Image 1 (cartoon, rainbow, N blue to C red):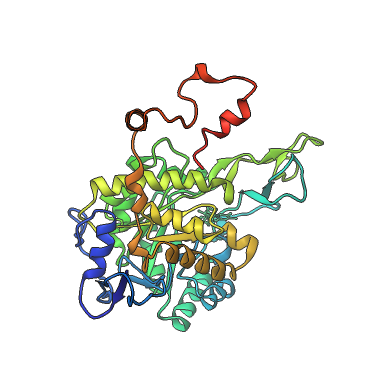
Image 2: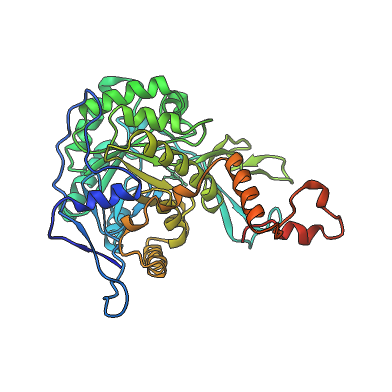
Length: 436
Ligand SMILES: Cc1cc2nc3c(=O)[nH]c(=O)nc-3n(C[C@H](O)[C@H](O)[C@H](O)COP(=O)(O)O)c2cc1C
């Protein structure tokens, strides 16, 4: 049994570090100054004797990430759920751990959206109108609302919710002065952190923004350098999955002074072709353009990317207090638990909120707590990164399995070789090779 006490200093970092095998302590990236940081509360782990008489402690969802205190790890991901004051206020009222606003840039007049800009994939046969929505494509750009309006709304939100975490998502052109101006103006509103959108897959890359930077490690290093020289609040770099090896831009961002990485943004996609009109979807005046894929269908891909980044962070940055935010297809507390088990400090939800509303937070929290109760985890740090140790290479899987087979004296689970398939027993044999 583990519980948290707020009386002694520094232990919280150690728990967090311990679960990822990371020593406590944080140093700034080489050559970069420390940012001014909020004081984090002292948190320490107290282990009680298990067995009779040990108090059962209600799971605590609170997290402290890069010095930011959140009531729970659930964060509104940048997009429509953070598009204006009214919806962000709603998110705070519902109790979300933090809100990341829709991405802003200096000149919103350059951002011109089209309608329709969403297309959905439903489970079931092609065109099924009733199946559950499992995939969502959008060709929406960053915020098209004037920057001044968004800044006033950030200010107002921070005035009304001073203790809650508001994160601005920002994106600019390949221009140092533009980035510096944007950071200065956004920070003046009192936002708690910045998430840098290096990952928008459509529209903005045409202006050398978003994924155009996130897909080019040379550009990324330079732009991250500008950003981290200027920013005084924690900076998270949001990664695009539309790249061969996501650990490369993640590594560059962290080496260039970012405090955290968020992954993933949407996956480049074509939702489908209308088989009556032969036109792609979403169809705007008869034409379309590839968009970004999100929702349930992307969850396994997002888990894979987050796992790769977490492994890289553990091996290469294990002496630093860096953070990871998991994003993609979260609709249940179990989905969130998976990201945390792979090392995520926070879990973002975007499409899930668009489909189910802000109230989904209650279900997410309750399901996550239920998972924690089942395993006697009393804090998020108790299980963060715990499942990373169970990944290995395929060669090692083969070695382990051969060893296990030897030890069990060849008690067969699944077929050992392609020559064992029988044809008649195909369905059964396939079943026997599924792990659960
Ligand atoms: C309609 C829509 C608009 C989005 N706009 C932004 C944006 O402005 N900035 C950004 O960083 N990500 C944006 N995203 C990406 C999401 O924040 C998130 O990374 C992605 O959708 C995967 O998470 P999900 O499956 O929970 O939606 C948008 C996603 C959707 C569906």
